[in-house]
Image 1 (cartoon, rainbow, N blue to C red):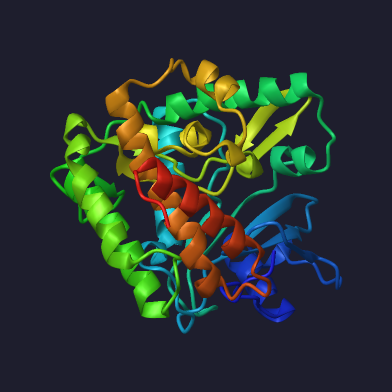
Image 2: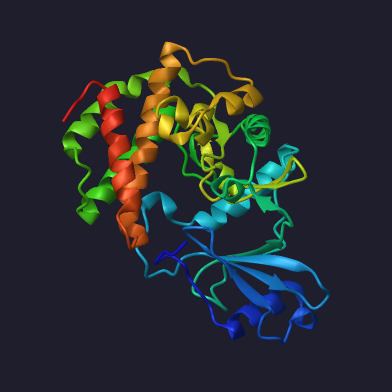
Length: 329
């Protein structure tokens, strides 16, 4: 995927990074030692071969001069923290962090290395029609179970993993969604709805979040495209930079409850161990879907999308969602 946030580096710089992380004896001289992995939207990632035959992945954060959304600041450090938490407290398979560097000595942004996962991407397989309905259902059920395990981690506060935190989930979420709307206004982006009305809808429904009294680790960006599979099993969950402490019901796997365009949530929910939502949960979930759709609209500006495809699609979802809140154009 193309994005102006991708911080590509020269082969010479990549070799220096390899030398720092694994030692000079692991640097490969051939021209094809590094291949860019093009699936992600935000960070640039390279598959790199080491002299001893190992394959590793290098992720590099966006350059400092590129404007990103407020919640996207310092996400690489957040991902490293998330990986450490998941490995310490769950059995969910995630890559190890081989080396993390935020010194800005070799590059103008933080970067880290991890092992390359020899597996297929669940999302790509689904897009290509390479999976049977039974395989898709099995993977989604596994994904639900793994997501529940991730949510078992109890946090010290609500909000960003490293803080500063909030004492209540209502306070944290109100800040998160307010940041997104301010990002949209700063970019002059048209939502198709008045910003004041969207803010009023949010304010009217924020009290339902007071039901959450314990902060839990939330992966949030756990889609099938961040899931690696092999021989019928999920072997790794990748891309953890958007994790925070909050309400597990905000997880991506529940989104289709509100918007059918996201698919069928039944297998995910079965694997997660969550039955049909109560009325109070439905109200919370609708707020969370609003948060996601606003991001999907507004991020198109910050990514520098070359076509309006995502913007138009997400705008249509917002119209449907605002209707569920009782508003029509």
